[in-house]
Image 1 (cartoon, rainbow, N blue to C red):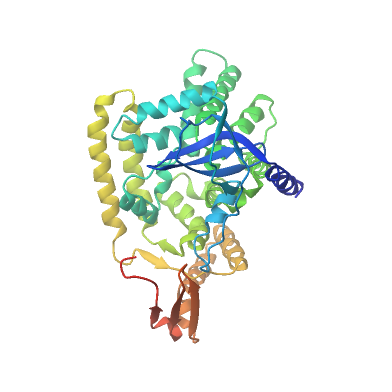
Image 2: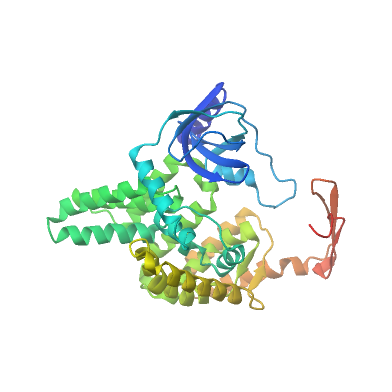
Length: 432
């Protein structure tokens, strides 16, 4: 609670100053403008810079005049809230500056990252390579992006605990052959730290990074803490550093699924179908609360499509920057993988729409999941709960009328009893 008060107190103090300075941590260039995210001492600010004259780069420290504008809430109930999304990233407002003053050039770490990014941009597989090497998300094929999300495998294309673990374990195994165990662990953690500094920020990589710090300290000083205890310490560290992270779906996915896999390791025993089922069950409330739909085939795709990517495409993508001649063949294989995902995402009956439910329902759901792993008989209760969640709108005997502000007037939505019919009136031109 003290950390939350501290964050909000300094946030207000800094926004009240006439000039704001910070480091560019994200830069997206468009034809006539650029979107920048700068990190100040206590939070981040989004900059929408028109008619860019300066040659800006990530890692530069800049100064702008404070014209912070509030980010508007969505006018349509239950719609995606851009404001909440930005707040979950600790972005408090946005500025449209007329001029940007460069105070300091990028540091060595940022120069390395920018050089890697520019080199990867020369390849056809650049969008995928930047994701798995630097954690930079850039959309290429929007249809494929949508298919990955529907199939529940979009986590494959973001740097996560898997990537951090592979780097740490690989470094440790190589170093252990040439030195003692403890120095090998310390140097492996140092290499992991450098890589973490180069990466674009994400809650998944932050969780993995601090977990390995806690794990290394635990092993060096023989604290004999269990994996569960290390996980809880890691959660408290992340919450202390990023109190607004609880609003982020990536934070929720990362910690809830990881907690389940650690706590119930004796049940899934590292078997792919059990891991996929457990992850799917734990992620249902998060997925449903953001997209109001779940894909019933997600377990099957995690069992089939994920191994294909990890065993074939992932290793090839890793070595492509080292052997550029692989770029075209790997790009061809990625196109096949994209088309395969698009095809299976449109299977009939794959998506089930779920209504928005109160938060206490989510608490009940997770309570039932915990009880289910303690006693298999609760499996039927969980199925019954999910079935009720699905049919609840269809057994509603009332008719509903909603009026939605769509920017240029109001749209009307009429819902018949038992959802037998839904009529939408005056939603704008047909081509929009």
